[in-house]
Amino acid sequence: MQITEDQRQEIASLFDQWNAALKTCDAKQVAALYAQDAMLLPTISKEVRQTPGAIQDYFEHFLQLKPRGTILQQKIRRFDGVATNSGIYKFTITQDGEERVVMARFTFVYRLDKEGWKIIDHHSSMLPDV
Image 1 (cartoon, rainbow, N blue to C red):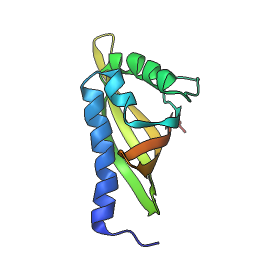
Image 2: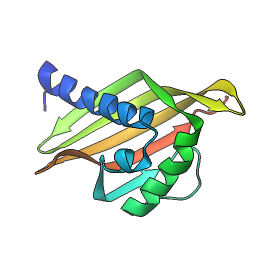
Image 3: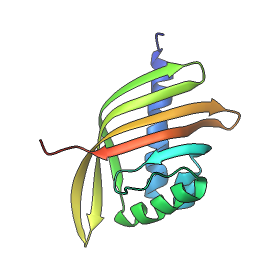
Image 4: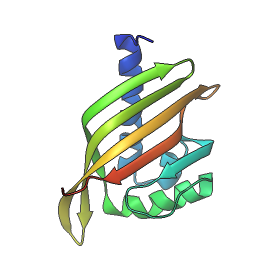
């Protein structure tokens, strides 16, 4: 299925929305972007998050690092009411007063519902050194 440039930009803007929510440092605001039945496989936690409370809990800790994300490479696809955005992103985080960059792979799966686009699956894992 061919995706139009407008559709591609619409899906790409969902990351910008998510990244802007991170910058608020409000875990509740970030978690609100996820569907009630979402699954989060987070970058810096071994725990799979499958409830709104667990997703919010992850972000309460992650946001303490003041993350700022930048997509370096992405592939966007869209199918009847579902879209994916996968690729490589980097996060600048602040840890012990020092900034550092974390490189990671990501996949966001979005579902369009009556409230708009919601994240239903989010996987993020650090890039291996090799």
